[in-house]
Amino acid sequence: MLKKLLFRILHTASYYFRYTSVLHHASKRVVAPTQVIYFNEQEQEFLEQSAASFNYSLDYTLGYRIKPQFIVTLQDVTFLGNSGAIVQGGKVVVESVFDGSRLSKSPAFKTPAFMLSKTRPGLYTSVLHLPWAENNNYHWFFDCLPRLYFLLQQVQEPIQLIMRRDLPAYQYETLQFLLQEHPNVEVMYIGEHEKWEVEQFILPSFISNPQSGYLPLQVSQWLREAIWKGYQVKHTGSKKRIYISRSKAKTRRVLNEPELLPLLSNYGFEIVRAEELSYQEQVQLFYNTEAVIAPHGAGLTNLLFAENCKVLELHPANLVKTHYFLLCKGLGFDYTSEIGTGGDSSENFTVVIKRVEAWFSEL
Image 1: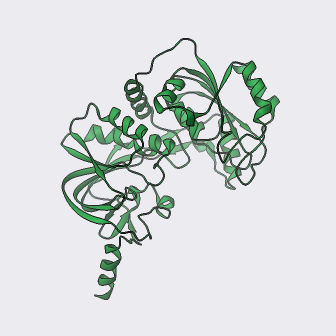
Image 2: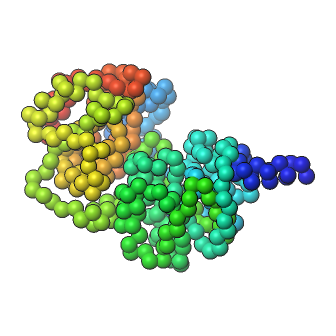
Image 3: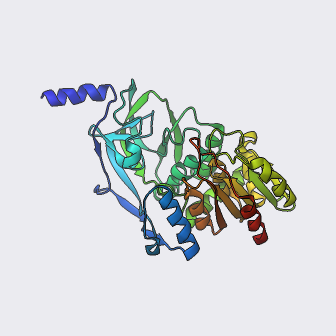
C-alpha cells in the first residue's frame, strides 16, 4: 500500500524512475525486416579508425545491421510534452526515447516536472524527440521525420499527430510538406508543461541507428522528394562546390582554415556558413552542389538534399564520427574522410593542407 502511494505521489510530480520495453508487445507489427549492408576494405578501414577513436573495436567484415522497423498500438498511455516520451503503467517506454542510452538523459526519466494533465480520447501518434531535436536539424531529419514513413503507409484512419507548439520554422515547414497528401493526419500541439492521458497511441520505431545517418533508400528518397517539392528547388545553372565553415561555431573549428581557404578558392569552392541562410536556401544550395568539404557538424545534414555529390569530411583524430559516411553510403555518394590532428577541449583541430589538395584530383 505504501509503495503504491509513493508511486502515485511521484507520478503526480511527473517523476518516473522505472521503464519498460514494447519490443515483445502483442500488438507490435514489423513493417520492414532487418537489413544488412556491407563495406569495402577502404570503408572498413575508416570505420575501424572511428571505433578506435572511441576506444572500442568491431568486426565490420560482418556488415552493418539496420534494425527491423515496427509500429505498436498501445492503450491508455501518458504523453509527456517535455520530451515526446510515453509512459504506460507508470513506466517510461524505452522505444519512445530512442534507446536506453538516451533514456538516461531524457527529461522523462528521473526528472521531476510540474505538468498539467489533460485527457485526450481518440487515436494519437508522435515523432517528437526532445531535447535532441529541439533545434537540431540532424536529429529532426534522421530521428524524427523518417518515423512517419511507415506510419503513414500503415495507418489510414483519422489520427492525431502530437507536436510541440514551439517548433522552429524549418521543422514546421518540412513536417507540412510530408503531410500534404495525408488528410487523415491532424497535427495537435502540446505545451512543454503538459502531459496528455491518451486513449490509444501508435508508436512508430526510430529508423536510424545511433551515430548513423543511414536511412533505407525508400525512406530517404521520400524525404528528399517531398522537401524538394515543398521548397520548390530547381536547377540553377552549373553545379556548385562548397566548403562549410565552422569558423563562428564554438566547437570543431578547423584551426588552420585561413591557410585552407586560398586553396579552396583556386578550385572553385564557395565558403558557406549555414547559419546565415534560411532553410529553403540551404536545401536549394545543396540541391545544386556537386562537391562538399566540411568539418564534421550538423551542416552536413543537408547532404540529404543533394542530388549526387562528392564529399570530403574533416575529422579530429580523437573523435572520428560515422554519421555522414553512413548517410553517403545510403545515398550512393562518393565519400572520403580526412583525419587531422587530435582535437583540443573544444574539438578544434588542424588538417594537413597537402592531403586535402590531393583529394581535388578526384573531382
